[in-house]
Length: 385
Image 1 (cartoon, helix red, strand yellow):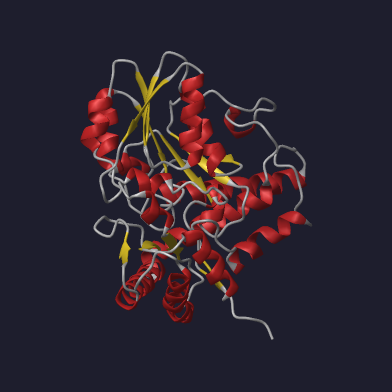
Image 2: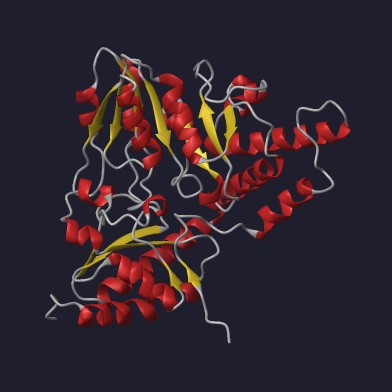
């Protein structure tokens, strides 16, 4: 008998939607052409790539020519950061960025770039005034994420965009966890660069995109052919690009047809029920505006890693934070930046829903979470109940 399995770790990766799989399928076999070839197979591939570019551009409200396809969010973030900053420049970022931005900025420091890491408040939000105060004469770039991957907290990117424009500084936002969950409009945000990733929005792993505002000259990281208007060399991954285009179309529709709102209702129900039924638990970032699919809850007197394993054995997939740093015993850098003590940060669990999740999935979680917490606390030498 197969055990029921429920997946609530969509911020780590999301399953391919059937429509996305169907859209990419022909490009593995009969439509296999190289998009740079002149013959008919090449032209079919080129048309598919350009159609996908239009869909991604429509999702973020830019011109198709401003979209550069990459291998994912990490490459998009790196291309934005290394594409602009050089020795002698100053860069502003935050303490809660994804490691694709944080570690890129640490590398910049080794390359002779000064980096300011602005803090966040107790709800995990960057204060635009801190960004403004950090500006210097040699500031080249501000990079602040649109929504945090661990807490779901939406950042005030519109205000930061205005500060950047006033100071005539480039502004990049990592919108990997926002795309498909919040409206993303590069004109409203006022950013020069914006990153998205396919596998966070029901497309496959290994594909992403960087919006590069017209007139923003970025240095390429890869050297080869003149692909992507000479911004990113390498033969286009046509099936994955087609998939990202389809996922972008569906994400845009989902913001209007109620499917994103439905996920938000499920998240709210789950969050409230867990907090009602589990003592000494609480919400991280509860007061802040968040993406509708994410909740991050602390369960005092337990180890988060132990809870992830125990829930997995019962058929529920959740996480303690960023998948890229799982295996790390260090508490989450996001939660500690918000001021959580290390033991509470280590006792925090992220639940992230996707478009495929149902009311039954949430009910399954509500059946197993309270009993698992109670069991783990009984085993804990410090918990007295």
